[in-house]
Structures are given as C-alpha cells and as structure tokens.
Image 1 (tube, one colour):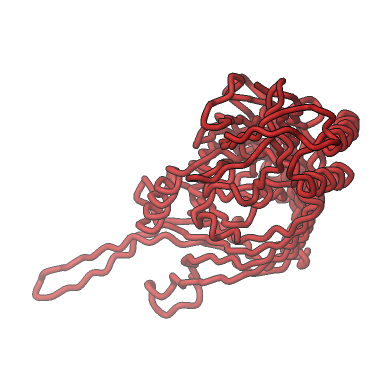
Image 2: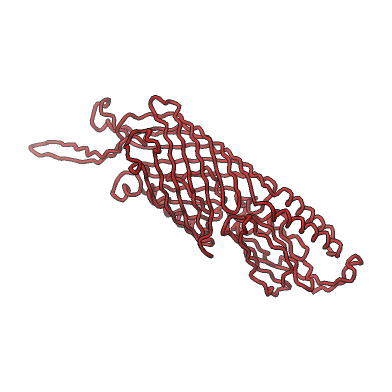
Length: 358
Length: 121
C-alpha cells in the first residue's frame, strides 16, 4: 500500500507540468492507440497507475516520416482501491514495456512544396519581389491541396515487455502445516504486440493491435480472507495470536494467449474550453492457446473523457462488458457482466525536458 | 531599424526589414508542418525554438528573425493539422512592438487543418 501511495504522490507531483493529451482506454488502462505525450493516469476504480515516456514531442512538427519510441510502465492493485481502504492486502500487478514505431504523414506533397519555399527564402535573403512571387505561387498550390484533403497519418509500431503478479495462493492439500498452505507466487510473463494507428482528422483515430502474451488465470480465482490463529498453552494459560491473510483459491495456471485489440476514438469540441474524447467502441479478443483449460473471451466497451483544452486534468467514465458472449458462463444476465468505473487522468509534457528529445 | 530599397527585380516595391520575436502555443494534438511557419518571407525554425514544454515555441533572449514588413503588414504563414477543438495561438512583436492582430488564434477546420496565410498588421 505504501508503494501505491508513493506512486500516487509521484503522479500528483508530475501533474504540475500537465498539458492535456488524452485518450480513452479500457478498464485496465490499455489501448491499441499510442498517445502523443508522456502521461500518467490513475484509475480510481481499479487503482491502476500508468506512465509513459517517449519522444513524441518531436511529433509537434510533422515530417514525411518519423521514428517514434518510448517506454511505458503501469501498476495496479488487482482488487481495486476499495479493497485498499478497507484494510485489505495489496495484490500488486505491474507491466513494463518498450515500443518503437514509424509514423507516416499523408502530407508529402505539401511538405515538398514547403521545402521548396524554404529553399527560395534561404537563397534570397534580400527578399526580392521575384522570390516573394514564387513563394506566393507555391503557397497557392499548398492551399489548393489543403482544401481538398484531410489531415491523415498512419503509425505502425511494435510493443514488447514484461508483466508481473505477486500474490498468495491457498493450497489446501499439499502443505504440512496451516501456515505453509499460503504459497507465495511470483508470476513473470511477457508480451509482444504489433499495431497500427490511423488518424483521420479532425475527429477520428483508429487503432488495432495483434499480440502474443504469457499470462495467468488469476482473474478467475477467488480472493479469500483467512484468519490464522496460533494458540500456545503454558501453566494453565493460553496465548493466542491472529494473522489475517488474503489468498487466491482455485486451480492456478500460467498460459499463452493471442490478444486482438481495437479502438475507435472520436474527438469533439464541447465548448470553447472543453473537449471530449470518446472511445466509441473498443474490443478485446483473448484467444488462449490452451483452449481446453482456458476459455476464449470477447470484451467490448465504451469510454469517454472530458478535458479542458489547456487544462491539466481529465476525467471520465468507462462501461465495459468483460464477457460479451458469456464464454465463462458466469451469469446469463448481460447487464451483470458489465462493469463501469471512473477514470481521472493527468497528462504532463515531458519529465525529461528537451534534452530527452535530442 | 534598417530601411532599404529592394533589388531591381522588386520593381520599386519597398518594405523594411524588422526584427521579429514571437511566442506560439498549441494544444497537444496539433502538429505543425515542417518548414510550414514563416513570417515576412523568413522561415521560422520551430525545431530550434521548441520549449521544454513540447506545445510551446518562442524566441528566447536576444534571439530574433529578420523579416520583411510590407505596407499591408507582415506575411504570416503557418500550416498545421489537428483534431477537433484543437488550436494554436500566436503573438508577434516587430521591433519590440506587438502587432495589432495579437493574439492570432486558429482552430481546427472541418478537414483537420489549422492554416493561416495572410498579411497581418
């Protein structure tokens, strides 16, 4: 819990330099769409914190093609924040990753014309009328091109990393003593994604990612609270100690799976000051390779964030079905398989200052 | 302040070279096109002028650009792309005097462009 508080404090400190660049992710803070800025987010429902550092500041200036790269990290308590405040145990889950991508602009004609304008300006420092006329002519061509085409870009990326879960597993049958039934498990997994982002301004950004992941079935196990009592008797006196333990119960396994993620973001202007970004429909298709033991799952949801265009803070909601087709047979009622939550997000420009980009 | 008469090719058209400083701010989804910012027929080096915040650009200290001020004003050209609701805002000083048009503010149009190309006083 101390770690989580420190991370929260860290995010608040960072928020001092915030400038909103927001996307709307799923309940786990994941998206197939790369953000343009470094950001820190804190999901109040899942107690999830995520941060990323990248060279996206270079994207402030559009070039025919650009390499983008970055690091990302996220951590959360599997049982959410409510469990923390009830004095429950933290079940830390963390993920670190690196990505590299290529962003291609669809403005190549205009960028070529602008390059020619610069060459003319550099060659004519006295700014004679002939040079001015040439520049005006090229600007007319640019405006004609710009009035018929939308701003668009395509980013292709590879994202890979490690994930980890640290938790206790209750094993009733194996241990020789009660206290040894609570086994500490340190799961270490990994993932690799390949993704595409297509931006069609002014309103739409689409993302799709195909990934391979080493994961576990902790989501389907039940977290149970135990009280372990030890009694020592001496000279007609009894000394009793109590230890409260939280552990997962059930058949635990690690497995490999294929993930497919899609996102469709809509950007809108609410008023002069306020903007919204709506992830109109996101899907997460999870295809385990050990199909006999683990079911396929199809998740879908929608998420919306509101933010001030010059603000530091964004807040929003998500609504997600964790099992659209009831593959896990948890309940026949569709609405009972829905979850929703509140997301608060801070976005900051760059904690590495401009040296990071050089 | 340096006054001058343009070369023969200018056919008598006069203007004066002024020292321009500027401050440009954008919302985070805006991208400026490379070589797409010029004032008075002088290209402004946005890569060089980017602040520690990636959304702010400005001349710093004694830095300035020598630009042509015509009778109708400074020819300001800026090409940018962005998402709905995005904007950029530009303040220009010519020889230390702010332009009357300050602050120039442009929002995203229906094609995702935030373009500006006109004589500005």
